[in-house]
Length: 381
Image (cartoon, rainbow, N blue to C red; front, side):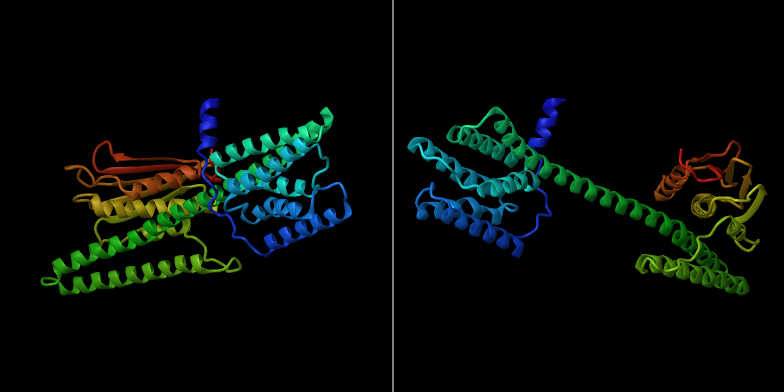
């Protein structure tokens, strides 16, 4: 387990949203350089000014590239400090630039915030090497040594924490977008596919009877016109929801009251019969909308795939705890039904999201049965 975790950290890529170098980065470096110059002027125990200026530029300059090249920035800055401390050890001089601590803490943070796993591990080795050498150059008590390591570990941990918090936030946004796409796909499939299937069936029927019964062909064209108008209306509603601002008042979703409108007269085959019974007071709007969409999709499937079907029976019954939806058709089972597509997948997802159950399969005697049970409140289990 520990080995797998280390391998995962080692293989961690760089974040893809690293910001470019901006005016604030230049301002930060300028402030630190000015601070260094003031320190050089006020203190008398430091090395000659030209050497100090070179060291300051080498330590502070990499801050400009701490996001795009974190390991290189750490290597240059801490490498310079390591060389300075080695020279101090060999020459016996004391005192270092205090403002370098601000820069190295920022670099430690940036290494774990913007670097890959490999870069963070290698950069941490460079930092630990410098810490060991600088404590030889400036001997300190055990408490001061522990405090120094704690400062760097805190900066690194802060960078890692913000990095993974941002990563989780991005992942949550992607998951939310995925759920929205799935919901949009279900709505488009359940609404548009239903009406388009009816249009196709009526067009086929009108074509078949146009020569022998022109009046019935005109009736089919009227049904096609009505279905096309409703399809266009629902498409405009969906597009309006997608393009509207948060303050827009959205149109209500169809619910249980609209299920009866799915019934058809005898002019279309198969004929759809709808029966409602039981208690439906205080039914959750989400459950009502789901019942409508599930019934609509089941009727569409029967029209597409039920061979020789003459009737589709939709039954909705409710009690104090749940609502049961049953759709039966009398189609022939010969040859089986078409392979399960997105329709059954979306129906099962819709029922599951509301804490219900979904079953679809051949009926005991003839045809196909869809049975859905949903809790009245639509609360997932």
